[in-house]
Length: 124
Image (cartoon, one colour):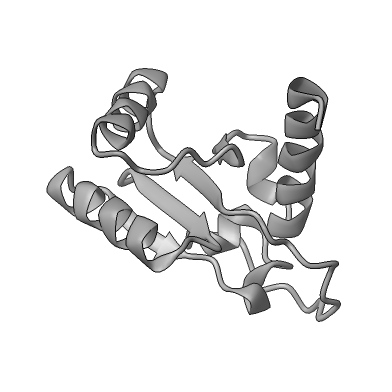
């Protein structure tokens, strides 16, 4: 599988910079739209065996920027995040990496899990 970044709720400048960096590194980039928050991460990554969700409930607003990294080694991810720093991409605290567990999560559930972890760690 090709390295992929899924992003949600990025401002235009940040989005453009991340897309530019990713294209130079041959990393696919896709946006997660508000009408896709009930979809599983597997579906959003276009993985075989993941169907579109029939759930139409819109969860409470998800207002933080979010980055999701798939099919990257820890070393690749560390390097990419270092490039983001060098290129002065604003820090995005809500981020996750694809795992065998979270591939089945709807995006909003992964977002809430990351949000809770961030609040616990940061004390916010």
